[in-house]
Image (cartoon, rainbow, N blue to C red):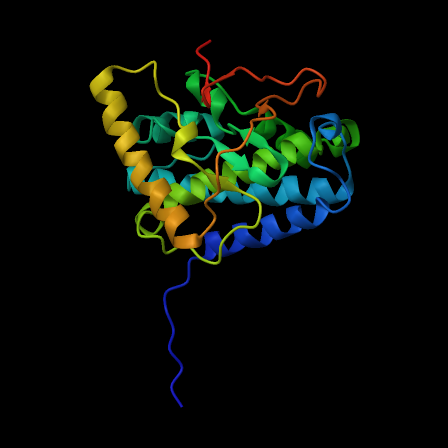
Length: 240
């Protein structure tokens, strides 16, 4: 008897496990604008797991960019990752089942920006007695989406070849919703080409592609769910 093995992709496997737990929560809490401030112990578990794993993956992405990297906080991650992958802050993550579009790294469009869900993660991690309400649906969704984006870039070659399996249940990406119109024309073209290769490889390999959907909201901030940022134009985040 012969047992064949192949190299594991542990961070993808862990993302799949976290996303499965998120999908289970969707049976009890509808992923809808009106529930974005809903918080619970199960959402706290999702937020803490996704946030901690994002921390680990960001360190590894920094090592890919610079083998001598010693980055160990969100500001250093931003400063090392965005010059190498400037498309990350504009990359959209879709939840087609719920008509949601998320831009989990949108704050990285600013040179000193920190994702709101990352702040929420740290508040819940270190000051849960005072900030338990930050373990809400909006932060949990964006944390898992943010991890998804980073894992795609950590395993960029496998994503481009469609080798990231098993597929995710809820989250996907679509280059139709990839922004960048504010860049110079030639830079915009090069980034679109690069991102599309990664995205198309992932979609074609894992079978998570879907038809265009209506965008219910652009979930960027952990503020009032009655006033989500819905500045969407032709599927691209509007210039601010």
